Length: 434
Image (cartoon, rainbow, N blue to C red):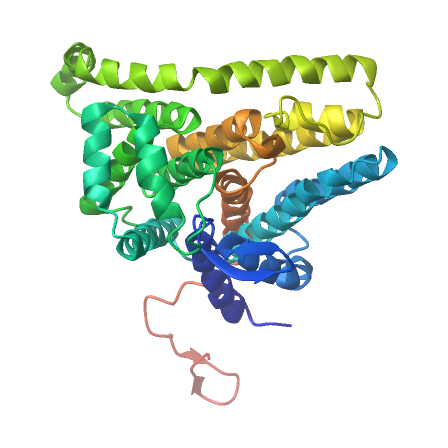
């Protein structure tokens, strides 16, 4: 049996490694057999190797084991469907799901056993992104500040992605990827930065997070917002509204009175340039929205004709259905769809229990859940939870189990506040109790 303090130390290391490694999906480590394994893939393999030991030491943490056990069960159902329907091209997504589920399961158990504050773990993640981008820009001689400044002034998202960030994301491979890959990489980066920046506001320590670090997190949220991933932006707006409400409820009466007026004033001031900037990005994203609507109509058609068994792996317009529930139902039938619904249910119940019992950083945990739901509802790759979505899932159930673990630990006996009193021992004078 491993001592508790060693488990906590190992879990802390796993937490830091997980938060640092997950965003670095453009940094390759191994190239073998025509397959390139980036940093998150390599770490996922390592996490899969230690997963059985972690589960054996965490049998009582049913939220974690149920959530990610269901993800592995989904993999089995999906694998059966693509074998039965002879669609072997779907095995790439099976591999993706298994690796990501192993990553999330191990990370969630590490969060539950570790004593590290998740706000600090998130800062480690933000630091890894910053260092990796800096290294990429130095290798490619791309001035990231100039690239971002041009994007802000011109609002030209195509030039920002195709001429700026495309080179940066290929710094370690020197093989230019196609436009779609770089766009999805920017979306993934925006969602991960948003998740980590929101988690910096988590008050899971005695003194919370310092104002300086919160200012850094707000800057990161602004950067993520400008990168313009629709899912990240929705979560950021939701979190900032919750943050503003929390701040005003603790503020003096006159501040609470003027807060809505300030919001309206900022909206009026931002109506010109900011609205024009966001509108340009929305116009550029019209094809993406139209493609998703086409995929959803296609999925509903497949489901209506193959309700129970699905048709195996399939694509519409060269892409998988960008919704985990619909992709699962169309590919593997009703059973896979119900497994996805059960995973959502466990995550939502864990979030509600956290908000009701812990009552700390409720706005953060709600934003984390919202990010996971949105990413799996509209994300590429069949909506399979990867990257920020899998980390968000691990945070929700891992944090809840951590608080329950701490509550189960026996509280230390209080020390006596006075010296022992001498009492007489029969026939032997006085003795002092031990």
